[in-house]
Length: 263
Image 1 (tube, helix red, strand yellow):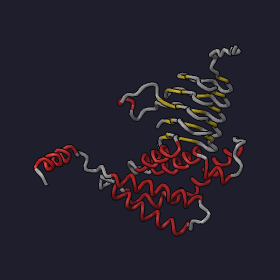
Image 2 (tube, one colour):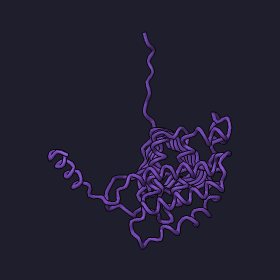
Image 3 (tube, rainbow, N blue to C red):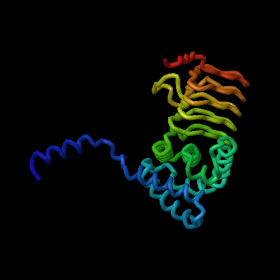
Image 4 (cartoon, one colour):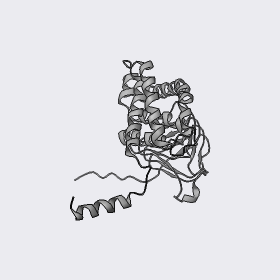
């Protein structure tokens, strides 16, 4: 090795200041996420066999992700496993919401296999439970994996109720402290975010609440922790909302569109 190359390598090592930044954790999390999806939905997957494989993979994730030895990460698996039937029940209700709301859905199998919105919801629900149990980093890596595949960015800390329907999915952002209640329909490009970004807002309710039976159309932006969209409301496309909306409201963008006949 030349002195010049040795100097370059030494400088790189000097700048690698994060001893726990192991990219293997990201790759292993993606593998774990795929295993979960196959275990819950694939007809040909043997559940008992995959559960054992999931447990072994989870142990590897614990070794990579739990840097603080005193945290009982290894005790999470059994509790998480016991939650999987309940999570699957919720996801089946989500899939039925897709069938109910989307006339383009030709079969329930199509929803499970071809709808990016359903995939994003599935990985959100699976990661959300792990976050509640206190497993570090892995839940966020799971939803970022789903984000990359689906175009839908759902933070695992969000709270989402039953029968959630996302149509087209691309460009949706759902922040960490969002609360979405039951039977909500959402279209592409919707943002449920904060009014501004400030580290001081950490651990505060900074994203909106969406009550039951709300429909939010494409590219609507709803911001703020005190913002509540009331039950049975319809939020029109391209709207910008930073204050609460009463129940049974219809919010629309009133921009004027002019059409001229070509000569």
